Every structure is written in structure tokens, then in C-alpha cells.
Amino acid sequence: MSAARTQDEIVARVRAVADEDVFGFRREILIMALHYQRAREFLAEDATDDGWEVADAETVVQEAREYYAFALGKIAAHRGISANRSVDRLTEYAWLLGRDDVVAAMDAASYPQYGAPKVRAFGLGLELKWPDTAEMTRMAAGEPCRPGCDEGCGR
Image (cartoon, rainbow, N blue to C red; front, side):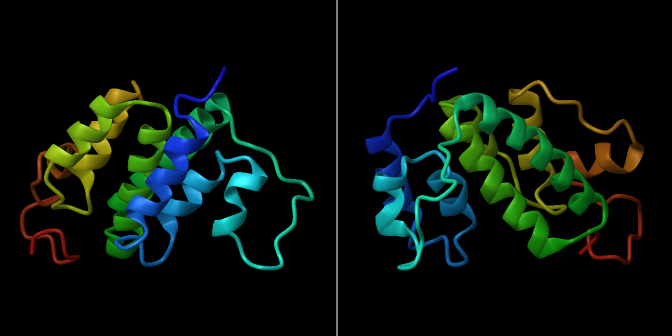
């Protein structure tokens, strides 16, 4: 399975998100799909190509599925910073796969409840199962996990 984005497109995307990607979470996803020579300018000075493997589309899909499960856990646990990071990373997985429709759906979804509506848009686009619990259903709709939640999603 070949990658949906060209090396030039990925490099351009890495540069485009750099200013808003303070901690490098988005760039980390993008750089894994670059050949070492193209990634070199974004790596630490002492980085080498030992063990460097370009993530193909199949690898990106697998990693995206695993990260989706991780993101669901962060939403359910009311982990704000981790949930925000999850939205950023899932957005880049969708972009790498050429799923501009999923990126647009995530951008259009609201962020409340730890990004649950955005993460759900990602899951729907990649045909991944959303947890069948009342709490997660409410959070995906932008509502608190339960009335009177004191863990933060009601604020």
C-alpha cells in the first residue's frame, strides 16, 4: 500500500504546522512518513539513518487505529492535555492517509469534552467503533459525561 501523500507534500505540511505545533506532536506523525534524507532537516543534529523506516500507508493506518484507542481512554479519563494532543495526532494521521474529508469533519466538530466530537469524527471516517456507553455518547455530542460532572467536562 503506497502513501497517499508525496514527500514534497509532507515536507510542506511539516513546515505549515510548525508554528502551531509547539511540542512537535503533529510533526512527529508527519516525519515518520518521510525518507531519512527528506526528514533530516527536521531531526536532531545527531540523528542517523540507522533503523530508519518510512511508514507506509498500512503502517499509518495501524498506528492511527492504536492511537484512536489511546485517545478514547484519554477522553474517558478527562485528560485535557493528552486529549488535545490526541486530536492533533489523529488529524495528521488522517491527513497522511489523504483523508481530507476526515480532516474537514474533525475541523468542523467542536472541541468540548476533551475533543470527543473531533475524535468521533475521526473514528467515523475510518470506520472505527465508538464506545457504546452513555458517557461517551454524551461526550461525543459535546455534553458532559454525566449531569453535574465534577471532573471537568461539565465546565
